[in-house]
Length: 115
Length: 115
Image 1: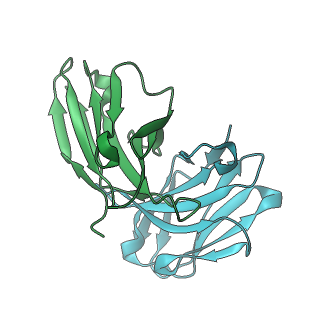
Image 2: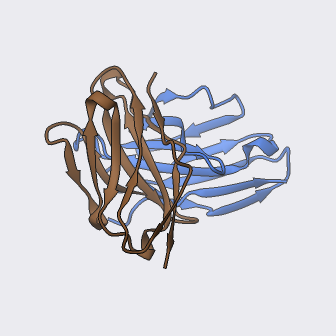
């Protein structure tokens, strides 16, 4: 069965600093990978997704992520963080090849932005 | 496109009572998903509909839980004889059947508190 690990429960960065959120997945076949963001009391908004092709994917709000098959990782990055980026970030994997349609999520990383 | 909507947004109930939540997917999305999210965790898959057919259920969906999607439009999730462990955010998502691999759009969720 597939799984997702987000090793960092909580990260604090200064506004304007760069950001990298880690995500490691476990899945035997081609993974379909997603990053979602959740603000307090809100649903999840899709930031970006990877299915195939270029391993560096661009998303909304200036975020990007790089798929590294050798490391089973899909880390999220942003060159300069804004105060409005403070939220919880979830990495997810879809095991579409198995016929399942559910997403498996990591436990999330809470981002705090200091002024 | 008005997004996925859920009703109610908040529900407080006493242990042993039954509750029902409603989800209205994005119009023309034929796939609908329910997830449950507890504090400090990522969403966990509960069940999945394609049109009116319930095609996938998680082992988390105990006998007290039932979901329906009559006519393949809105969906309801009912919890019978609620327990304190049912307290969580219940998220609904929908996706189109044509834009493989089925990017899921989430609603704002229904927060259930069982006292």
